[in-house]
Length: 197
Length: 244
Image (tube, rainbow over all chains, first blue to last red; front, top):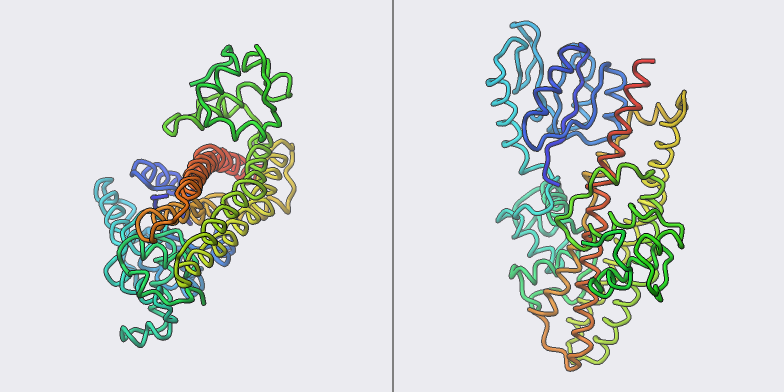
């Protein structure tokens, strides 16, 4: 499935519906949920991952906890600004009076920037770094050993592993190993004799 | 493409790949001179539903018509469940048995045997977990959604659940089960040393390829037919709750 999922958390009915209308004209965007109040949005966010978020200023002000529990979400969030002065530190914002073309371009750029790191696609190519990790996983190394080998933090390796699994649609070490063999990332001889953890 | 007036025996004779569908509809061979429609009626199967399923099964590019939205989600779901049963009780054990037979008779190294064995065991576990998740959570949720949508006043507890869950979440995490099987076929064709029993090897590859095709069709049915309808139903119900 190659689409970008959007959550809208906008209190104004007209602005929300306007945003829906604009987003639905951009290809490969799916609007997953719309929220008109901060509490229902926050409740949803406690249980679900969010790819992209468009949020109004007032709901944003009441939802700082969401951004703490979803690291990285702030970069994938578009804030709808109602006034020109804002004390908020956020990368992407849209002013309500901006032209349609400008808004569309901003949204497209945001998707381009992040869609490769989000894991909704089933057929994306692995990056070189990911291939290296696939190779080491197939050789039977643990995340900690891979981290030491590549001078990365274990946390970074875990993130790579998650991305690999969702890109390939494979979760098990043995599945990754067979993938690596048929794609010439490793030979059968190099594989550890027990491809399981 | 098969139609309601066709003789069922001709439809099957010309499209043998339809065969796995019959047990799912509890239909048996020996159709005589009955048309597709007559066979469906005899077995209490909705003819339009059967045609949609059969034609989308025959042609991956076949886009189900308006027709399919006429069926209750319950009908679609009981078909999906029959398909799950076929995978778990027939298709997977069958290919598994042949793979082990093939490994037993082979001159593969321990490492190679172990690679395939562990791979298949992990795959089976993943497969069963995937189907269990659908049967225990997703399908009951959809049935409940259909039931609640028909009510004048939806249950408040269910309305609450709708606030924090959408079928689109399931769609995003919906792994394709056929991918790993394709890797296994490629491993046999490309990377493993040749098997002595070529006939058996050919059967394994044939079974794997059939199963991949069936799983692709099954996933397309879930992603292209079931989920969009469920998402639409969720949307309607939510807008009803929001504007009482």
